[in-house]
Amino acid sequence: MMIPVIISGGAGSRLWPVSRALHPKPFIRLADQQSLIEKTFLRSIGLPQVTDVLTVTNHNLLFLTKDACKQALKIAGQPTIRPHYLLEPVGRNTAPAIAAAAAYIAKKFGEQHTMLVLSADHVILDQAGFVAAVQQAEQLAQQGRIVTFGIQPDRPETGYGYIEADGTTVLQFVEKPNAKTAAEYLDSGRFLWNAGMFCATAETLLREIEQHHPALKSTIDACVMTLDMQSDTAQLPADLFGQAEDISIDYAVMEKSTQVSVVACDLGWSDIGSWASLSELTPPDAAGNQIEANVLMQDTQDCYIRSDESNRLIATIGVKDLMIVDTPDALLIADRSRSQDVKQIVDQLKVQNSELYQLHRTVFRPWGTYTTLEEGEGFKIKRIVVKSGESLSLQMHHHRSEHWVVVSGVAKVVNGDEERLIHPNQSTYIPAGQTHRLTNPGIIDCVMIEVQVGGYLGEDDIVRFTDIYGRNLP
View (cartoon, rainbow, N blue to C red):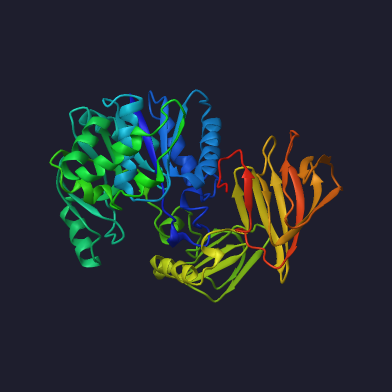
């Protein structure tokens, strides 16, 4: 039995402003409107004889991840696939995530099962080639090997790590090279791009982790001992998992183990590590422009233009070699050769404590979404959408009052001691300090406009008393 393990972590800061800390890279949608993580789910469940899929992700992203998996299962027409979720309280790089997945699978399914470790934010265009490479890797994994996947390079790429190989034998792992060294690697024919995908039995991975990083194995064993194996969602304990070293699986195991093999393959693979690599998925026009937006162009060459606002026109005149990425609340304009430097903008936003590195104007929540329409001194206006059967927490705000006007659907509102249904074109007022909650008892989305008024309107002015999603409570 093979169990795909999808590792979904990292902020994808080089893909700002589309990727944000609380809506990161795996949830970026491509031109076909499928997100990267949806494509990874589809790739996984398209493998022969897969019945279970495990995703390791941050606990704050569980609801987005479940939505993506549900959509992938619907697209694939495979409702019998069983998804499982292992939740990290904090990010600790790939070695703790993979170690936790191996220990979880060994305990829940048996250590003889094969794990196929995939990143949630890669693109693979050749599914048939992917299946063939996985089948070859699985045979090696059953012989006690940890198998990594090496991509046949077609250019001297400096953004990837490399594997020097002789057949399936790994000679060495190499860090990202400079341009001259990358060209030499390409000419030699001995080097492959390190795709960051792995295949091994849970038993093999745990044995090699214990041999080469025993402290990590001990920490993860203690974490998994606390998990409820009867549930499809398991939360790693923060006090124990936080003690795990922040280290990649390459440094912790792969570069030290003598049990590593490689499968060389050509899959149409990309790790989508920057706007430069993402733009390669869009065919260029006659002037070399790659367009995912509503544009008018004059004397424009070799530009990548993307917008999340289909009703906004972007006009360019006399420009060349630019990246233009437009979102409702931020616009990126950069030289195409500087795509790796976008992370520096995110670092500046963090220093400024700006919400722009964390949130979009539309924010996803387990119950639905809210969109900030306008805000100014002492007020904020939001459009709130609550999905059928979902509920906000029972909560209170110290510094703001709220006016709710229902636009469509129906809202069941708790407002202090009162509970009533509110229909379209009806409203309610919630003063500061009042306990309140909104539930959608209908079968369609409940859409409402919220007007906040107060001296402080930050999202952290919230006290939750009960919450069906298990979020922070006093």
